[in-house]
Image (cartoon, rainbow, N blue to C red; front, side, top):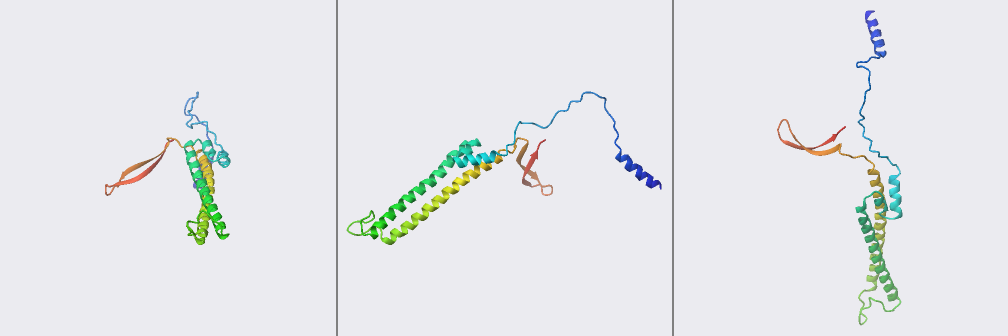
Length: 192
């Protein structure tokens, strides 16, 4: 019975809230430890960067203020367009020569004294090769175009993370306590 009263008294005592002051009343100034960088999270920033890159390649990178990436975007797309154009020109040359050859007219691959530089089979093979290379160049160029859009969007998304000096990663040598040998590791520090 006495044990029962003790438990009830303990539960009631824990549920009661007592108001007490341990210091005298006065103006207490508390310094805020949360640093406000006036940074506003913009959820549409990745979408804007992707849209700008889709309109004009490199514009999304400029929106992200990564100007050094713009020459790489234009070099990649320009080389793809160059190879597409070169392969398309060669394909049309060989195709025209083949059309002239089957209609018994002279073409640029005729050669001298009736000895052609390229036979009909070689012209057919060259057409297939140039067409395959042209189509591959087009596919790579479209892939690079889409890749620069994805890169601009991803970069805009990652730029919104607050990474400051309070988050550090440093290599650290740790001595094993049994063998006293150095162990290489990495340490991540969060400073608050």
